Image (cartoon, rainbow, N blue to C red; front, side, top):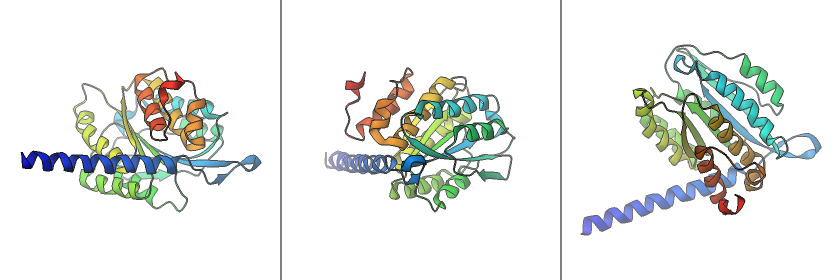
Amino acid sequence: MTNQLEKWRNDEKALAVERQLMKDALAQLGRGDTKTGAGRSAGRLIFGLDLTGSREHSLQHARIATAAMFDAIRNVGAVAVKLIYYRGNDECKAGKWRTDPAIVSRFMLGLSSEAGYTQIERMLRFVLAEEQRISGVVFVGDHCEDDPAILCELAQAFGRRSMPLFVFHECADHDERSLQAKPIFKRMAELSGGVYSEFKPDNGAVLKELLSSVAAFSAAGAEGVEKLAFPKTPEARQVHARLLLGSGVDPRRLR
């Protein structure tokens, strides 16, 4: 009985820490510090993309979803986006900060995939080396061949800096490697104070809504999310609700 009580207390403490991380991270996500036209502030959102060979088929979905993300938040607020991608065996590059959706879309159209191993650790270190304050980080990928312990340490560093990691996991039911990556990606999101969500490889609509919700929050906080059309996909509705609940808004009143 004593052991069970102690375990319950430990679980409650862990849950309380994760809740506080989420609260702190969402508070940071709603703040912007990039000046745009008319003196507005923009959130800074890093978009990390796995471009290894296994994601070649779904790259087009990512291109379309990214362009649609900007369209969805055009009237919500300003957000600056930096793309970081990895592919092949030793290529991991970061673009420049962009607030013009046309430039980002053209850059995405020029990307292609290349067979190789995942470089998630390298991508996360790129983010931590950023001198600018980051509102949040979105990672879209399917597999994980990096050291899980190192990834979790880096995710904890994100949490300490109130920098949430939103892991949008392309997870196919028949793909053993994507299923093995699921608990790792979930833990990374939890430790950073972010959110994990999965979508099927052929479902670009889910990715579009997921990206739109996070970008809207980065641009204008809970008010930005409220201005978006209520998501149609269950995966995006879950993230939509988490963002609002973390800001003290009851998502039920928006339906």
